[in-house]
Length: 203
Image (cartoon, rainbow, N blue to C red; front, top):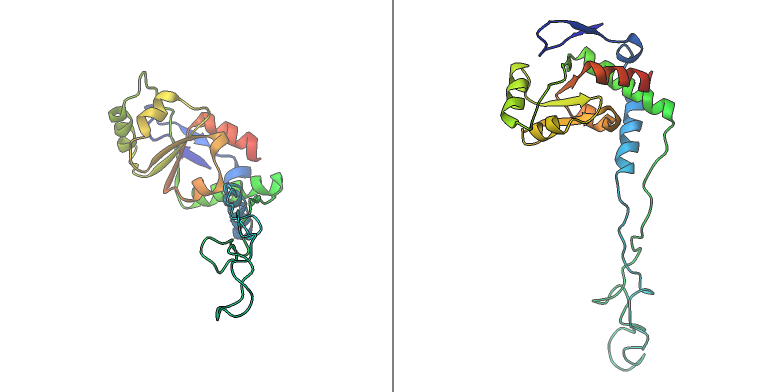
């Protein structure tokens, strides 16, 4: 299993480990990893007040009988304007648990499927002396890419600043990749340095 370095003058290939890019696609496991990641991204900071938490309403608004109106004990009832909320939302933790081995297996499954679909390419790490969007756009265009996720071994400020204004181009490090960002990308460009870190992480 090999990948061509699309922007390398030497036209060298990089070898892909079978243990990472040669796995079957496990849809159930990938779904579980995606749900877990998205659930963990939820803040869960929503808060509404119940009738007991709304200020006021301690006095009965009018007498029980003789008014011709429905009986009421408080103006903070949920059916009154300004009243509390029935079944009010409270802060909660939406995060789900998934074992590390299962999460790494899901990443391997996704990477293998991306390779089978020819959506993974090798990319020699660009060397930029300063942030230049025009230079980065040319590198991406020369590589025949349009929408791409670039994975680096460590964040390069010049590369990040050069690519952040290019539509459909995202730059992340190995530590930042997750099931969602991999699946939503049309193409995934991996540098040789990043590939070594990915192999050590998910093997």
